[in-house]
Length: 311
Image 1: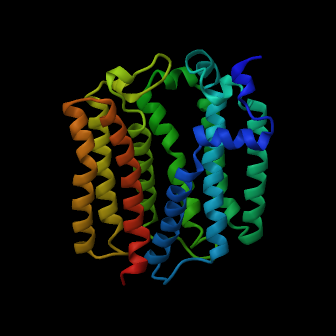
Image 2: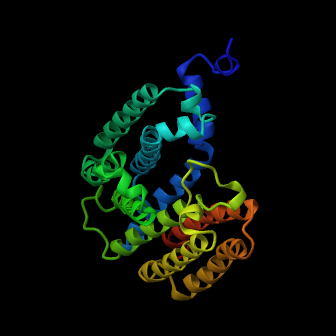
């Protein structure tokens, strides 16, 4: 009997639970996505001069929709990377047979239909905000019909794929203004630009590796751009995100509070990348990845949650 096959739980539910632990850890995603969704709605609320948060039911559906959206992006990636994973990363769940691509498609379809129905039930107008994000995600799944061209140009690949972030955050801010039938806040473009910058930070941050950690067939920005250029690009986008937070904070917070917080956050989160520039290590690469997520949380909390707590 094949040992790997014997170790695979029989039921789909059990296998999907094992799959999420490896490829879509809910325990990590729920806090990050939940805080981001609440912050997006909170920013819109504060920028429009409205107290409190949107209806709890709308917020819950929005958080579930964002979580489902990122899960569906993971499912699409499993399909896009199937050949490379089979060749270079056979230990991953799909190549080793834990779940099949067909099973992931079925689960993905069920998840998508469930959240679409939930949106239609609590605030049908939100469905219109999902259309651009879904359309762009569909293009991403097809690699914009130019997979070889994009994969040969990591910067173009990164920028084109990260457009999905402001499209999704337009929906999340719409949990406030769109669901209530109001006009969007004037500062919305700044917040969406921040979502784009933060998306790039997270994506680049998770693909910075020390030379000893590079693997054949696994795309990283350190292998594409170099061990010095990749963290330097990450730092440039960190500063860009900080500038966007500063300008977006004007209608929702005080300049003094934002300035103090940004000074602390930028110094703290830039430190791992600066250390990696000097000495590229395995631990340093992981620290940059962690800093990406922590900065993203901090920036959204500063713009969308702190204004609700500090009049």
